[in-house]
Image (cartoon, rainbow, N blue to C red; front, side, top):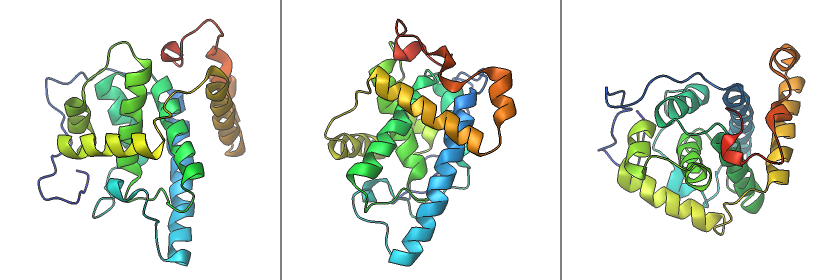
Length: 210
């Protein structure tokens, strides 16, 4: 389960009332890899500066969760059935946070909570049908009260700038594709096509990466 500042943190739920069939989109693997690199770099920086910054304290747990970023993203996608584009937009939120609050680092203590909060907000922005906060909290292994607080905190940190233009979305797709190429996964691109290949000016963001 995800560690929190309280003692009543719920376990990650895998109940029969949760949907279970969903293939993992390739973009989730890329984002998880990018986030793992970011966390590793920031953990090193934190040791040098002896601090994480204060802006993201609302997302800190008492210890790093045992579940990997990749498995956590797969879990969110599997059970919430949100569109894969939500993960790209969620990643954009984290990138905006990094630029707006450079002194506050995304590290192992907060990355999972940031991800579930960002993806949930992105789903509300993009998807016509989405689960409520309570369901996301169950899937993410946090309390509903904590997720509500983190959602509000994130919105203020972003100055409520939670829309992502098509051009910005496409730019993030190119960035993720570049990361894949830099890490020697060119064969995956050849087999599946470029990350942004499914983009269309006539398509809504919520229909991408399906």
